[in-house]
Figure 1 (tube, rainbow, N blue to C red):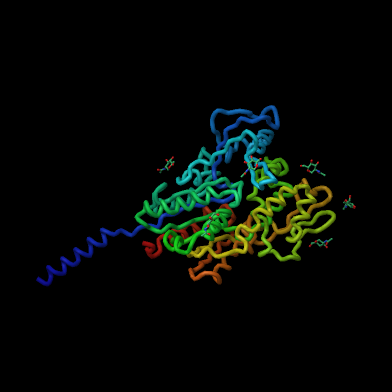
Figure 2: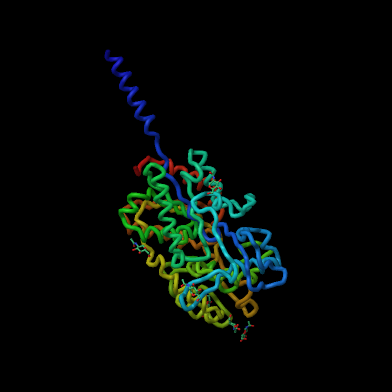
Length: 406
Ligand SMILES: *[C@@H]1O[C@H](CO)[C@@H](O)[C@H](O)[C@H]1NC(C)=O
Ligand SMILES: *[C@@H]1O[C@H](CO)[C@@H](O)[C@H](O)[C@H]1NC(C)=O
Ligand SMILES: *[C@@H]1O[C@H](CO)[C@@H](O)[C@H](O)[C@H]1NC(C)=O
Ligand SMILES: *[C@@H]1O[C@H](CO)[C@@H](O)[C@H](O)[C@H]1NC(C)=O
Ligand SMILES: *[C@@H]1O[C@H](CO)[C@@H](O)[C@H](O)[C@H]1NC(C)=O
Ligand SMILES: CC(=O)N[C@H]1CO[C@H](CO)[C@@H](O)[C@@H]1O
């Protein structure tokens, strides 16, 4: 009798454990600068060269498409990808006659690869997604992607921020009211912070499990300053920096990612020109002296979007690299000022973002009751951090932690 009872109780326990499988917290991926695919359709009034296509009756891959980055053709690409700033209403528009769309919102495909051909050179969140799938996650249901027009900053991405909020809510509900983990990379982190700073405590408690930030740009970086002054070929050797500058400096996101005076000392020299030095207080003079006052207006539009840096009010896992030489100061000579490539003095960081900005998440520790975990990966370069086994292992560990959030 006693034995039968025990067996019955065991049976009941078995049923209840089986009936309530541990639910994985669904994940929403928020990509960084350059981390979303773009498609374009053209009906242009003019082109920059005779060999540029003027009209298409279909959408084609604009970013990332290596075929468009070869010499000469890249001039067409730059003209199609650039934004036009309107100083009266302080907003940007696509280049005349260029219709842009960002495919795949909600799915993972267009943030797993930057290029349709899905060659390994352009994997983005792919290795992380593959690892999640191997632990039981499923693309498009428990892993979602939130691509966006990375040329713009949150002041012009109101619709995107709303869609991101809606995606989090939808993902929560379609996964039996299970809280969502946000994973951001690079600029995707200040973007996510912008959303979270704008949501109520009640909303965050209901929908958000945690926020995993990879290589977060919490206080800007030096690299966008060089990009604004003289362009940046993004290490694609066949591309000349000056040829892509027109497009790069037209992006409000480039202005948004410039160094923050919360992280750079007012006396520190950021740029040396043949005639003077520029510090964080000289941004206005800098843009005047390089004859790009539009850049200054975009800087004004974006400088306070996440400043003062304010904790997201959710559990944070802050992961980033260290010990990779990262642009620290730019020295221009008469020969290079301001259309040539400067001598670049190194700072610590992940190759793209300066260390002081990467560790900006530590400020959250004193601002919120939720824990802020911090893990640094030696030599994890800004893009490679998405492919590193130790980083992916850490993400899996966080996601398989104790189940909560129901
Ligand atoms: C800003 O002005 C331009 C040019 O007049 C116009 O096309 C655009 O729609 C305006 N943008 C907004 C957000 O009002
Ligand atoms: C995810 O959704 C996209 C479009 O929304 C689709 O192309 C893709 O095949 C889907 N992937 C899976 C694994 O269902
Ligand atoms: C500019 O900055 C450099 C490096 O910090 C310094 O050596 C130099 O004296 C400064 N020049 C001027 C004109 O302030
Ligand atoms: C400054 O930029 C304007 C507009 O882009 C251009 O017309 C002008 O020639 C430039 N001036 C100098 C000194 O480069
Ligand atoms: C750079 O140009 C300025 C102004 O043209 C000149 O005064 C200075 O001597 C030049 N410096 C060098 C190192 O050539
Ligand atoms: C809670 C909160 O701050 N909500 C704001 C988020 O942003 C929208 C649009 O800017 C505002 O209308 C909300 O009040």
